[in-house]
Image (cartoon, rainbow, N blue to C red; front, side, top):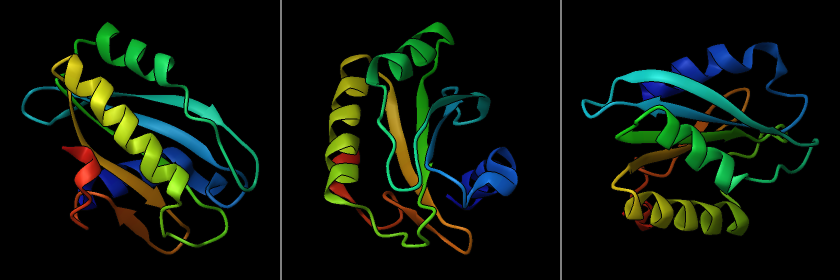
Length: 124
């Protein structure tokens, strides 16, 4: 998760505190990043996850795995119930396509939360 966090911080740049934005890291079978997709921009407190667009990027790039990420401009890295539900739903969709959702990372300006590092079962 630390490597993914570093990559994601480069994608967000100085915009991390302005509004919620969702990214998808596209990965091969060896879990190497082969690209990324900016999925959505939201407002200061929320962002809608575009499931079909995310799956389009995964299938179009022949991905074997992925990491989804979004930021919390509030500085609170704790996932909301909505974050957990979205992660579970996306993991289930990926599983049907034989794509592994390796992690969901929530970034703040100072820190991050990794579903995988925290043993969240919604990824399996």
